[in-house]
Image 1 (cartoon, rainbow, N blue to C red):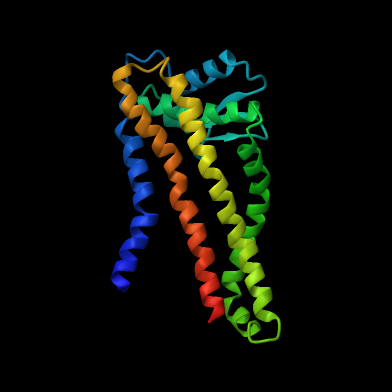
Image 2: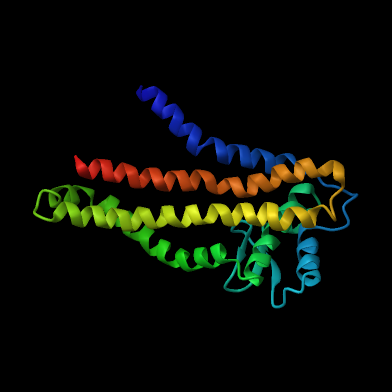
Length: 224
């Protein structure tokens, strides 16, 4: 039974990320038939769609859209690359810029929650370091309720952010980026583009499940 649980946990946490990385790498081959790089496509789409004030930058910290600076940031491979992965990831991040421009509520909610989640994660780290003391505290009157409240605030907030992130990512991929890519990517490349868009969104699935399971694990431990 324990072995099966370990296998299930590995499948839940590891396989989504492994699959996403495999898909992204599979389509990184340079394409001379593509008219531009990921950065050039992103810049073109932002100007074409009239998203004023938005920009495109190279980053070493992973592909993402920053709502505070209204900036699409692409990793070097996707910024300079002329591949299916590069242009598809660029379109996905532009999808977030479109969400922001149109006031897409889940994206705005996630942006507000991120700051809270960062503080909650710090609280979670403190909970881990203070675990021995906390187990003593749970034996005191009212102590268990205090510790459970701290765990829920910490891991529950992180889980909430990740759960809100999932619809944001899938919307950016399939409601925003996919229709745009159909105008720029050859039809025979569209199945691969769909796989890349799924991978862009799927990277958050394991994180969401991990946050929920962390919360559940702490609640089970504290109730003992």
